[in-house]
Structures are given as structure tokens and as C-alpha cells.
Length: 307
Image (cartoon, rainbow, N blue to C red; front, side, top):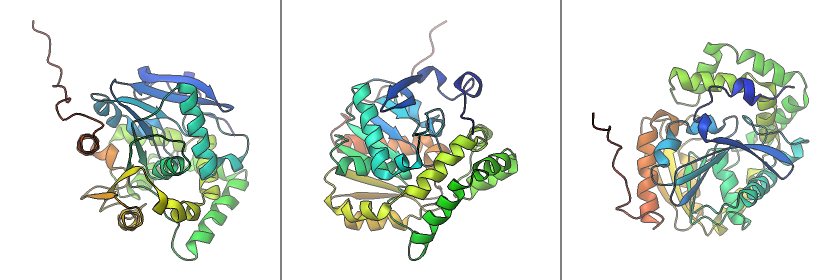
């Protein structure tokens, strides 16, 4: 399997000027950084990358210093040698090692889907240090019933078949297939967003890493530990999310003392890509509520220079 190459596939990567590569924990990471102020860490979900924050991140950077890595094996970050390193605890440790190498301690952490689970695992293990976590359609809980056992088994079988990632990648080169996959999450993206997902899903290493995460993902342990979470938690859920139903956020709300749910209507799993300004406005409001941002810090939009 061939990984994405920055010199070729990254030529038109969103926010390319903010990108750099860092070696940490035996992996070469692709990390984007921009802005100044309190530090916020962004973690994307399974099968995505930093491109997922392409519009969200610059708006957030008006008030924050923003750090966003590609997860192991995703986008332009190197894949681990074995799939056993794609478990939730290992992913949490890998991100903690990266933050240590970067000398970064986030004030706020924002995760999308599986990224939210990683952040909570880090917080529970004492490896995050953020004052608060904001979850965007967080994938916290196991599938109900027999699906909780069957889904990892199916993902593992697919991952172990050397032909499957290549087949998925081949199918994803069809624009119609990519659009159907995205719309299957309840979201609708512009042509730029679909093209970026097409690039990722058309790469067998990226696909293999996403399948490896699914095959090794144990959310039952996280679910058991969530009531012990001390970090402040805001759960943003969307009514049209077909990947992680909004009911998940309310279940987690009942498990985590002091947590809060914000329900967004008419948006799907990729709400931060569909309506980035609306979601960032919620982040700013929550950061003010938590005391991470002062209410008078919001800068005015830059004005054009006088002729």
C-alpha cells in the first residue's frame, strides 16, 4: 500500500501554509497550526484528516492558537507498524506524546466523532490537561446489541484482507460513490470538500488505517469510565446525523456529571464542514462560559486598506 505524498498530493491541501511535519513516538506527523491566544487542540474522526477543519480552523484562529494533527495513518501522518497501535488507548497515548514533543498543553480540546472519544480517553488517563472538551457528534458508545460484537469482527476481517483497502480506494475514485458516502452521514458538502474526501478515500493506506481503527476500537471500556470524567464536557449533536445519532449525546449527558448538550437542527455528521461559522460561534460562547476566553476578546473583521 502506498501512502499519500505531500510533494504530490498535498500541493493544494487546505491551509497548506499552516502545515509542518513533526517526528514523535516513532511516527512522522502532519500538523497544522495557526492563530494566537489560548491553545485549542482539534482531533478529526475516523477516515478524515485536517482537511475536515479547512473552513472551521481559520475562523477559530481569530481567537485561539489552533493545533490540528492528522491521526496516525490518516492523511499525511505516518501509519503505525501494526494495527494493535490503532486502539483507543494507544491513539490517546500517541496524541499525548505528540503534544509533549510540541510542548503544547491545550486549554480547550475539540473532537469530531472518534476524535471526541480519543480526547475523553486522554482526559480520563490524565494525558490531556485541557480545561474543557467540546465534542462534535462524538462517537462514544458501542453499537447496541449484537452489532457491538459483529462490527469490529467485520472491520477486522476487512482489514486483514490485503485486497480490501485497495478495492475501497479504487471504488472511491468515482465521484458519485464519494458523494453517496458523505450524504450517507446526513451531510452535504461542496465540491471542494467532496474532492478532498475523494483524495483520502482513494488512498489504500488511509483506508487501511481507518479500518484498523474500527477493528480495534473498544468503546465499552470508555463507556464504563465516562462517569469518572472530571474535565468539563459540551456535547454538540445534530438531528440529521446518520452516523452517530443525536441520542448518543443525551446518553453521555446522563453519564457525565456537569456535561451539557447543544442540539443543532438541519445538520448532519459533518456539521463543522457544512456550517463552520455557526459551530465556531458555539465554541466561542462555550469557551467564554468556561472562562477560557474573555467576552471582549472577539476582534473585528479585518478592514480593507484605504486606497
